[in-house]
Length: 322
Image (cartoon, rainbow, N blue to C red; front, side, top):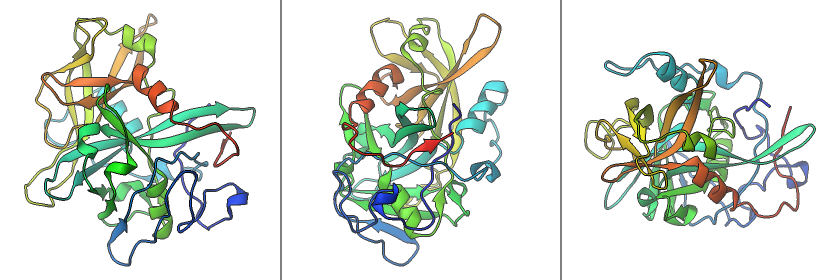
């Protein structure tokens, strides 16, 4: 079943029509969402409890019209890295803590598959990143122009109660946040997200992780650096080439290669497994977690942890239909 980028309805609809409550009403387990003030920077003040909602179909071909920047000098090129940029170039979003430290990191969009039916597919959508980069009161997202439809100037979204919006998994070193506030911000600004997401088909499964052993496998991290210094450094997207391995079959997957640039913590890690028919299977292995050496929080562990956050379904939210 094909995956398509989610969007929010252009025109507000009532909750009974199958969308979440409008800003200013209490969501499912969420706090009241205030409207953003006028100006270039949207502000979502106050804590919002973890809130899981399903996302609807995207408009036909909207995301496909977005053209991503060309890879910079020295960036890896070839079948695998070019395919990663093609299918996941719009899956990442840079952010940082505001004060007292900037604490730059990268998050990525992940669709947790809840159920499938004869004519629909239900997901809950999250942003995933390194847990230690979310432990601040105020966070600030750099909104990439190419992720908005219609395309917007470079903008920022400041979130108060930042730490409380995330659910951390300490044993994995990652945290996840429902994307409801991101969609509500776009709706208030009269645009919608044109993202790609790490989907059920792209996220590695247990058998994929088991196939990676002590011998290093070429791998790539798709993240946003923090270049130029100061309080507003450039957050350009880069693809970092290295390798992953599992020296201990029961241990964490390790990253070897260049040192992680500032801003790469939490970024998605990709690799291609060889299949018997001489084909390649491209996968998102998980999120990069800094350390000595850096490790990967793999989807064989991350998927069930995120899935367990979904409450029992008592009513349908947004559904994606074939």
